[in-house]
Image (cartoon, rainbow, N blue to C red; front, top):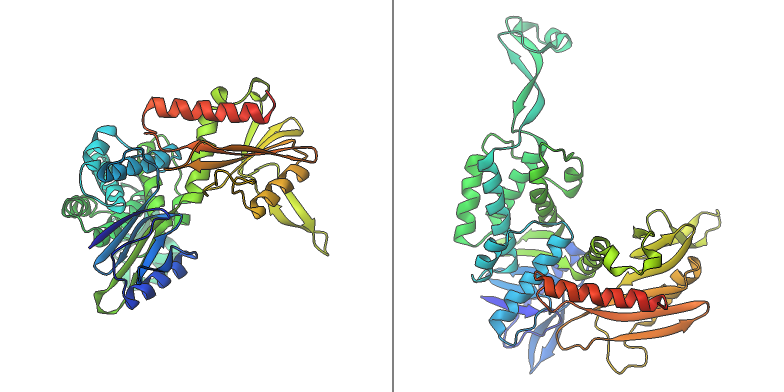
Length: 430
């Protein structure tokens, strides 16, 4: 049984068992955050999605959560538009590479969000592997009847009974390297988790193609950071980025009685932040006012860190981390932060939380910045919103950007560029 929800939407007409509630609690413990709110609706227990989008499996039940980023009034088309925009945001943040012709075909099939990503990974890896596996020279230690490469005398002397054999180390041009081991590990994990016949078929074919590659017992995100990207393996970089996406966002727990609990969850707070920063960076000359064209854009304030206080040892504590700091020489004319929350039209504060405003105020004071821009998403059912709040020495502006249009189309991207250009110019009094 599959249930599709949009973020912050309430499930209706489903009976949630006590066991499923416990499994949700286990997943939340693994992820370290709330995935759903449990509530009573029409006398029945219901769940309400939060800011995590993805796929959650509770035994035979699958819950898919998607962002409210669509324009259509047709339910089936809404899902396609939301998935398309979600994939586009991931592509823009360099987490995957998508061929439009394959995406169009995928969106017409009844696949959940996880199965779509699995299909993209399997299709692209199969295509690259058939072009030729990445091979490089790897040091191999072995015991051979002939002398080859470097003779390991220390190892040889440890095993005198093998005097007719040579302990050697030599370089071998092989596909059994760290890059391919990571990819094979992800293939095996996806093969265990997919429920789609065609995905399973492609992953099984990849298992056969990759037999010469060592299957590691465990791979984590840190292992990917150790893989150098060169001109020889650059074509596999999008696949490594997608592998990282799986490894970062997958949580698996197997319970007794073959009741499988699985979550592939993306935090929209993080994705929204990365998308907006990458979009501004890519279109900086179209978005930034003329007097900011030569400025440095510092994501997460890298290179311009500030702290709120010092402890008793005079060590700095309570680090500030604005999403984007604009630096011009030694000045900070603009700071931007993103919040994946819904604003409230008609509210005196526009629904900006007190905690978020205090945070922006701290940015303005510590960076001596006259202009702080707070960006929120404009999702289905919202109007375009903007409000200015005067503070000592400057201004904090809260505004929405529209994510409901088809971001894969140039027209929707042009509108987003125009909106951001207007917000940046207005925040600078241009």
